[in-house]
Image: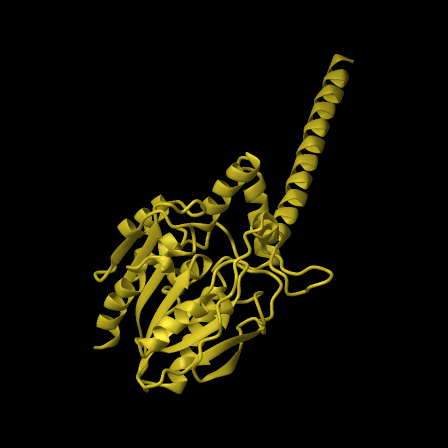
Length: 321
């Protein structure tokens, strides 16, 4: 009899623990789905092209709308590209007044569009570079449901590079990204790029997607990364096709030999300045350089008087060869 009661008790305890674990796992999965959609899925009922909800809430909800720049007054045409996963991506190609083999591919940040980097495009055009400004996947006029924080955008960058090379086989190409665009160009250095790509400019990029989300969770909601981010990472691989943990700009620059200019502000409240220091220290590129800007907020470093002189001093020496 005692053995029977003991078996019943152990079975009950095991069943209760299994039930609790199942409930917790289910709750974590549901929370992970919610987080992925809030952070990465674009569109609303009224506007299918709207940026993700977290961007709308954290940026636009606080009255800090980031306004696009005027379109550069240079010859322009629309380019389209079919991505590896069958999305139609769109970009604007601008031509400088004097022809050259210098090219720059400029990548915008999270929740934004190519029009938000047209001030950079204008500077490059006046410096006699051909410019290509894509709308990244799930942004602007490009197709896609989920932005991927640079992970799949890196593969799209490699395809845009091939499009440039098919247009100008002698092109010497710079990849210039801001914030999420910076993460994308760093990740793109691991995509077997052709020798036409000669340099990278990363402005305000993050070292690791998981760590960035962990920082924001703690800052905005005072929540630990585990188990929410871990559950969200599983969901993300299934829904959006990439992993927070596996998509690491830090690992990409560790392996890359391309010259990289790292730019960051000590006043960046979104991506910690320490991330740039870690990226720079990890980079194995013999031609790496850094530009430290003081007291300017995230994504606005171009306002520094030293920004474009430093960028062109760096890019020109690699595009002139």
